[in-house]
Length: 482
Image 1 (cartoon, rainbow, N blue to C red):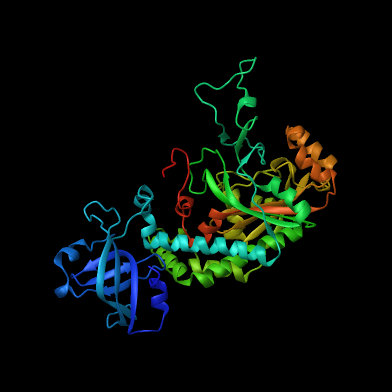
Image 2 (spheres, rainbow, N blue to C red):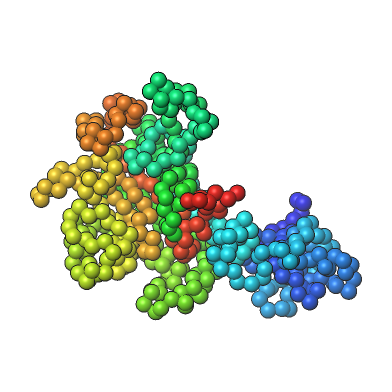
């Protein structure tokens, strides 16, 4: 086993006339002679040449699409087109048979819908091989970015008793017999009898706990799964998704924006450098897909150009108030083309508005700041009331082409009186978040942080259109397969 060489390494090597052992899955087998072998290290296959005249016919019949095989022999320069080297096999062993009559992933183009129905096997296709290698690189680059800057990786809890966003869309955690839970004197469920002695849920965010870490360690980040029980069957929502949430002591909103922009550029560049072959494949896939669309719906830039564009341009920064003025005067708003018309200050921006700003008006990534207090979470630092009487908070959202919001963050409210007042206004019980308020009682300081939805990042970098295609095992309403 230890002698096995991965196909990517062989194809990148300049060596020939060496003895090698490879293992992988058969993509195709033609003329009883040429095996296209893939082991997942690259989309490129290694051609394995079989000496069919001296091979047992029973073995040849078992070399079918999807079968797992081991092949050893001599790596030689290839005379065929499309590959520099091929393996002249001396020994072939079938490690796992695959019935060609029932195997769903045949050597042909499959629709994404078909592959979602066979999601347990979709990793074996070129598209999903490329997506998940890119996802892997992005995850590694995120850790590398923060580690290079001295951040501490903090594991925040999956099970919590708080709803950080106050939205109430949480999955409850219990070990009760749901058909017969214990009741108290009033006939209500007695959570004191539950495993944790109180109502608990799956986390919607690690932010509040992350702030506790930042108040001692200065700079921390979390990277883990989060859960929203939001009944959204859309191409942009999942019930389980991954979030990167840094929290930084002594940061203000400008520091926060600088860090978020630097992070996005760093990880995109890492993927472009590390996964050039995969991103080129996904670029061509997207070009083919766009040929089916009317000309006016096609992207102005290819996937690779779009990614490079994000690296080459500073993100446009403007306030929510400035954005509302632009949107109010925009052609789609005046001609009533927006589904949600922008009538004035206080409007909660929808994806169509965000994408107009990014894709039509500025034609580059945008950071919006200073949103109305009423449409943002309780923990965001409040600004002074402006000349028009508008109340805003030190929030920032980063908007990307084709995606809309990819990052949401803010400077946090470090003033205890202001924070408590805002919690009262929003009906958030202070006694349940006593531990959070303690960070404002004992050595409070200005601090900030943001959340980056990892799947939305992967969606952007791979050019895919559906968020269910960029997470290995998607969870959404009425679906929790495997």
